Image 1: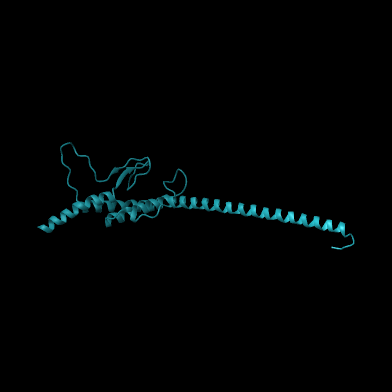
Image 2: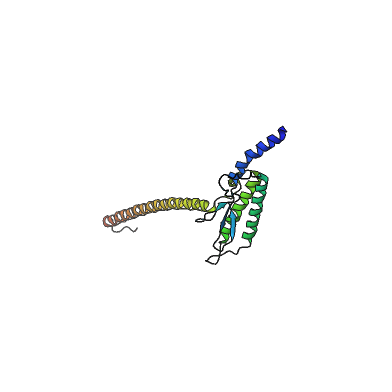
Length: 188
């Protein structure tokens, strides 16, 4: 009996973690089809799957965590299968670009893994490519600026060396010219 109570307490303790790790939403797309995911698209309001509005005073049926988890997994698998068959491209006739489609599938897979293991979805999610691209662009701009400054410094140094060589050349020509005036028969 104590084991059953402990198991129930453990499941009750894990239920909020599963709910936080993977809240599944549903929404209707412009074509009128019901879609599922862990983040509704921007500008779309999704409802949490499994939440039902009960009339006032009527208690809600207690949730079976295992049943909810299996239901969420089925919905995720169904949405992943649908997404794999969606054509991709640019333009109004396409739902996704290839990159957005893959990102959405990866997001669903990360949430699926989180739901199964009880860990956070972020542990399974691939790095954010946009953030990485922004970081790389910032590093490139910084490196480019630094290299341009170094090139400008070298250019100024070379110009100073040219000016110094030109000054020495003129000085040497003056000395040679002056010595020719004093010694007209000397060949240089």
